[in-house]
Length: 156
Length: 155
Image 1 (spheres, chains in turn yellow, orange):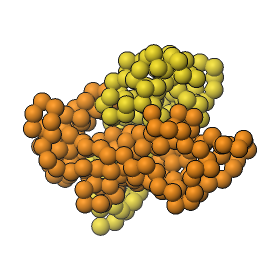
Image 2 (image 1 turned 180 degrees about the vertical axis):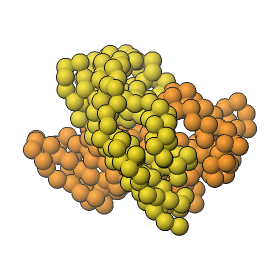
Image 3 (image 1 turned 30 degrees about the horizontal axis):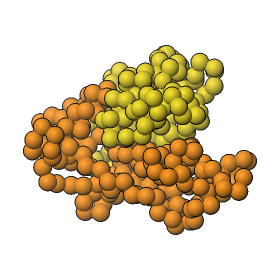
Image 4 (image 1 turned 120 degrees about the horizontal axis):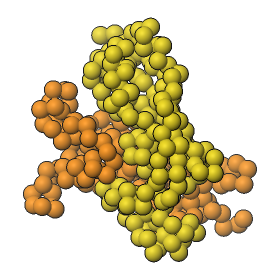
C-alpha cells in the first residue's frame, strides 16, 4: 500500500474557483433541516418565539448553510471534474471546519464563492487516498463575510 | 432552552452537557430530504456494500449537526458558536424501524465534550472544547473541536 500520487492534471485544478452561487435562506428549509437533525431550538423552529428574540426572525442553526444544504457548490459536478482528472471513484466525506462569523437567518441573501483549496495524496485504511479540501466564503446582502467553510473529501 | 451558561461557570475540564441521539433509517431519509444529500451510500444496501462499508451508514454531516446541537444547547441563547470542526473517523449504522415511527433496539449515540481552554480575546470571553460523538461501544466515531463566546457575569 502507498500514498495516492497527485497527478499533474489534478494539480492544475488546485486554486480553481467555481461560479459564485446566489441563494436566499428560506424559513421553511431551516425548519425542515432542524427537524431532520433533531434540534428543537425554538429560534429555528418557532416563528413567534424567534420574532420575539433579539434576532426578530427565524435563525438558521450553525451548519445549515454550507455543503450540502444551501451550498456554494455542486459536489457531484465538482467530483465529475476531479474524476476526469484522475481522482479514484470511491468517495467519502472526511470532515468539515466552520468559521461562524455572523449569525445567518431567514431572508438573508448569500453569495457563495468556492475554490478548490488543496489536493493531497495520503495512505488511509481505504488504501491510497486523495484528500481534497474545498473552501467556501459566504457573503450576505450587506457585503459582510458571514461564514467560511472548509470541506474535506476522500477519494480512494 | 437550557438555562444560560456564563464564562464564570466553566473551568478547564468542565464537561459539556451530554446529548443523546439515536440514528434511524427513517432519520437518514429525512436528513437526505432536508439537506439535499442524496448519496445512495446512505440508503441503498448494494451501493454501500460495493463501496466497502457493509451497509448504509449515517451521514457524517448528520453527526456534525448533532455536535452543533450539543454546543448550542450548552451555551444557551446568549452564547455564540464561533468555530466548529470535526472529522469522521468511523462508520455508524442506523437502527432500522420497527413501526412507522419507532426504531428497533440497537445503537445509541452520545455527543460529549470537555473544556480544554478558556481565554479572553478583545471583548470576547472564549471557551474551547474538544467534542465527539461516541457509539454504544464508546468508540469516538466523529471527533473535533469548537470555540464558543459566552456572556460574562462581571462585564
